[in-house]
Image (cartoon, rainbow, N blue to C red; front, side, top):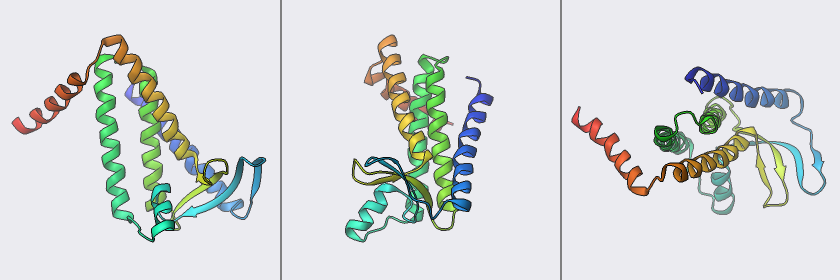
Length: 183
């Protein structure tokens, strides 16, 4: 995909996530609706702990990683994923599934930042899965899961097609840091 199309896809995904949240916030905050009996509910909830993991840890231990931790964490995780994306793009520059995957992940990170920096009450989650531990999530979390699936499928396909080994990644990472150091 062209860079312009990737940016447009990211913007569209962010607009969908934030638009849905604005509609829910303005009209459906007090609504609880069972979508699939015993499995999935619509149940808006503000997560003031910035992530599912942090919220779970806080409920069990009272420990909270905090805002700054999440801001830094999201940036580091995105950077690692972007390096992985660029590594695989070197071998298969026309892989559109890889482009879609990084678009999904980038949109999710932007939505996370909007959730922790713009929404004053926390991240607005609204879908509730009862089957696996009462998980409450939103579209951004769906984007992340789709990213994982698409990125893994693309990476495996590229690895098999080009016979990529761990040493190739090691050399790629060395090359990234040598260029920066020698400048």
